[in-house]
Image (cartoon, rainbow, N blue to C red; front, top):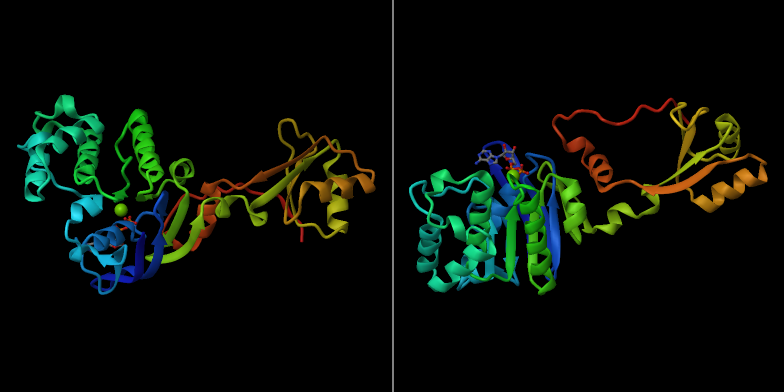
Length: 316
Ligand SMILES: Nc1ncnc2c1ncn2[C@@H]1O[C@H](COP(=O)(O)OP(=O)(O)O)[C@@H](O)[C@H]1O
Ligand SMILES: [Mg+2]
């Protein structure tokens, strides 16, 4: 278990991480989400002692990283901006890390195989692609067979195969009862990988908890309703004080369709039945994690392209 308590880190006047507290449980993959520049990498660097916080700390089962007796067998990390010596090979790089941490050479061969770079282990690192560099970074993280993995945007630069491989690696790791904290600015990736989420914006905690708490909640539920006469449906909803959005006519919806929040399928179906309004569609959907994230971090993004649909009319 990781406990981050009141972590604060400023660069000059810029507060990159602002009184951040959260916990990461073992046996699960925890997604660490936030827009670019929200402080994810800074937090992770502070956690493993590569940056010193102005206040607060991160504890691994109650112990600070700098006080761990064998840090690489407790915490393995892949952080961004890692620098490899371009003239060395992957095997040489791993061997140096292994030797300085009392890790046997046999483990070097193991992690080269696990990460799928054994065939290029003797190639100079300057010839490595971004994806191969990521795999080597993960190999370093795995070297000490750690209980905790901290991965900063590990799928950056990986091809679809590589992305699936990292996802599976993290899932297996968690299934063994170990702890995984993985950062991303890609919600879609986290939806497939994470059990829990920690969401930050401008260095501050926005929300945290099990991933389903972010999607399958009543407040994220939307009912879509359509019929031969959308205006008739609208009249009933307005009279019943139901919050809705009226969408303009579109393909398959010649008179438009309506989206309702704060209600459920049965109530809406029954309401329209009582009012003798014919419907051809009544469906329930939940916002995607992407949408939830956009809403949560709306005020915390410096710039973005607005992709929200334009609604023609708003009930209540
Ligand atoms: N070494 C540094 N010196 C100055 N500012 C930094 C440094 N590292 C990060 N920052 C700033 O801190 C903020 C958070 O950055 P970062 O932790 O990299 O965010 P993220 O990883 O979420 O994209 C950004 O505004 C960034 O410009
Ligand atoms: Mg980052």
